[in-house]
Image 1 (cartoon, rainbow, N blue to C red):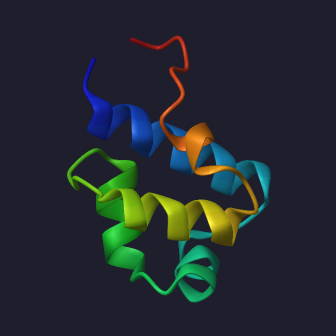
Image 2: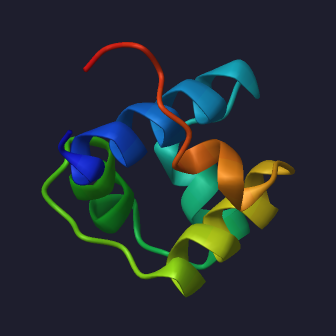
Image 3: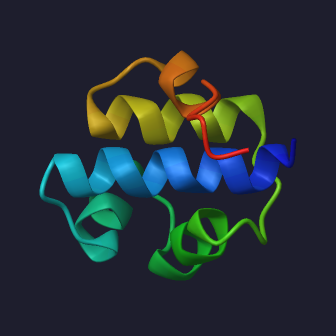
Length: 72
């Protein structure tokens, strides 16, 4: 299981469910849109602190970002 891709899919899914663009999530989380884009495509290896901050901006638990999604 490629955790980077899993986390990326989960971030994208959660962001889209909230109706947010990457730019809006960037504003809410303090990360850049480029970082979020690279994260969503599995090109970034986020720290647990990054996951916590992104999850907080999305209003979800950080655990949701590492939960298997059945696509592996």
